[in-house]
Image (cartoon, rainbow, N blue to C red; front, side, top):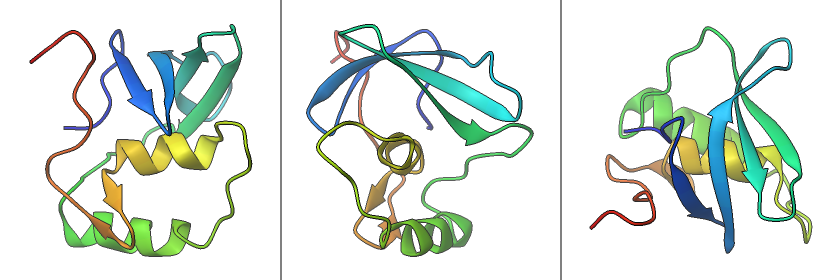
Length: 98
């Protein structure tokens, strides 16, 4: 299941709250602990982790370099449950849920 709006996750070592995006063309936004908003995900598209479409996305996005800070690519790869160049069915669990 993709990252759910209204839940808190740990992505790339940072804790983020997932909310609906207010930016045009973006589906979700992550609010970091220091208050930064990072918009990610294409509006109108369905995220399908653990499928061939997910594997294709993970392979394409694996080559994008990530800096020291959390990026939209890091969040999208977590949304697609990317592990290297492949997509898994099981992804990050919301914090506070076992």
